[in-house]
Image 1 (cartoon, rainbow, N blue to C red):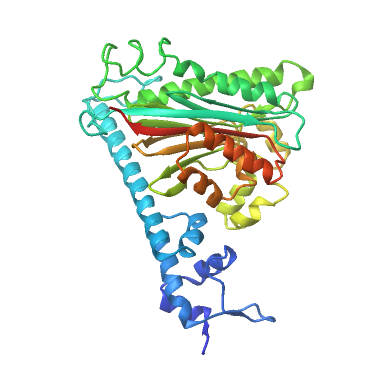
Image 2 (image 1 turned 120 degrees about the vertical axis):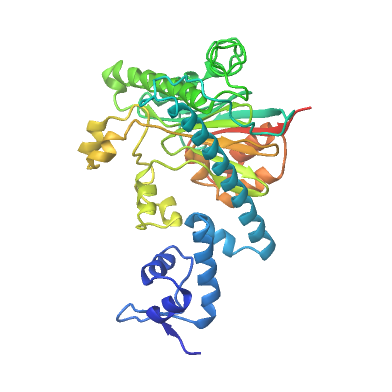
Length: 410
């Protein structure tokens, strides 16, 4: 069979040679032959269909890290994965549309800047769920020291509104992770004025400036943002309280649920996953050196797992910008060192949200996590099963998990 040069193959596949080289590096599309002297790549005509499939999946926005699993699956499994991705994308678009409507309404009143905290009175948003639909939550959380570490510096919490996981580091890592999680727990207390649903909380029907449907998106994000700012202050105070605690800090990944809206905050390399319609989606983005290298195409996700710098963070609560500069990070990276990411998701009945520390994801492949979530056991059973599997895989690090099942209420 005659092989095609990379240039000819690129033309027929309607891809660039640069894209083909990237797909080769990531293991998505290996050349049929590589010249041992020149390194020139050659492809078989039979590889055109796979190349086009990769290109189509990229065109719909499927992350490169997920494409490999899709193209290696059976046709039925691949179709289910694409369907699940589409539904997540549709939910994200719907939430963007609601936020855009909110901003249009706010800005149309002539304001040029948004107050902080944000508490405007826009026109009511469209209901996110059918009339009469209510959601209930089943949840569980646990952490474990693992089999190697002497101390458990991970913390996890789960409640009807708040899920949180934190991974502490440094000499005061235990205190840092506990402080990060504890700073959010007041949002889960029905009697607390900041908790969604409290009469004094923004968005409640009895509160000034309420919205008709759930807590306003901006108000929900503000509640979470303020709580995370308090968490960061608590972690910094621990690191500054004694010379021997210097260099302490923590990751934090947390979710706040109000009605069908789920606000997510994330800083560090703990993760948030959504299991929906049989598909598993990572809805957070690691703030780590290796993830930055993956994003730049310098590492594959598989290589990142065993990379010697896999534990180095670009962002975390308590991280010093000066220390990052001293470690060789760019000025931009140093400025972003303590800034979390905030986002909104649309929760649906049947969703499972898993928050976990890297003690789980470093040893359990995504396929194993997906399998355990698909089993539909009770949240407490799933959490304990994941921890057990991580320990059976060596348990080299602390492990923390928080899981929430979203169900339709009666």
